[in-house]
Length: 373
Ligand code: UDP
Image (tube, rainbow, N blue to C red; front, top):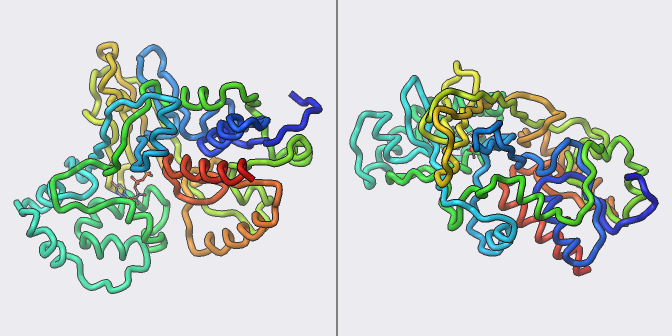
């Protein structure tokens, strides 16, 4: 569709930020057009039905929706119903299965002890050593759980996931995971949690209703043309690519997924099994049928998806945030600030390790400020 009309907003990228912004802009009576480089909408939230199994696979890794913000929850519920799934994660270390995040059950099983909750703090204190100001992921983790638990459950997994020594990573990554002195093993403690009953793609279809979307269309290949088609651009792709890598490339981690149909009702008994050890090449195995306890599935079949972490800066998933990245990012942010007719949003354009609810919150906020101006 290369027509002469000029829209209020050209939204680049159909992930959560782009979809929420578009939906809000359209609802506010603005004209919106969306372009998307891939051959599907939904960004990394995209989900699809695997053959005729009634199993919905999250194409880019298991996505659990969770938030404590009633506004975000009410907003997203306009576009889907959620099931009552509560996420629990298990991890395999040296062929034994433990519960994550680290909780009393993990600690007792790992050390072969039977601590009571009020004994955990002094027990961990005896394992921690003295790290006054933890300056990186490794130091932070050891200061929280001690070296043994760190080496068993965090070091190998983190090395695989981020492709580097955990000493080089920011402490903030590990503070995503709580450490619990009770047996409470729910991964998230948010007020609201669940999986969209029909998977994630229908959310995007509903948000984008009435908005023209052009797939397989790369904004950066024809920037001048696309700019001329809209009063404003909303860009949700990688920030370094937008500025033609002027200050060099930012570090991203990517993920490769290997899906397989297996002849089993239940392959691993849970939706996500992490593999903590360095010598197992994948970080985790997903078995998506467990995300939908409300569904009936044909007997004798399941789908499993192995996740391998790798570097592929053309398929960015996770911002790494090395010190060199922080320096480059500051410079890219200065350039962003000068782009008066472009808005930047989402994990890639902001180079931030956002969860879904945070992206929605940020898109609603940006849309409100923009559309009421
Ligand atoms: N992590 C770990 N072992 C685990 C799970 C997580 O070491 O079994 C660390 C790892 O560094 C990971 C971080 O905790 O990158 C955050 O984990 P989360 O589950 O939030 O990652 P995501 O689901 O976003 O990939």
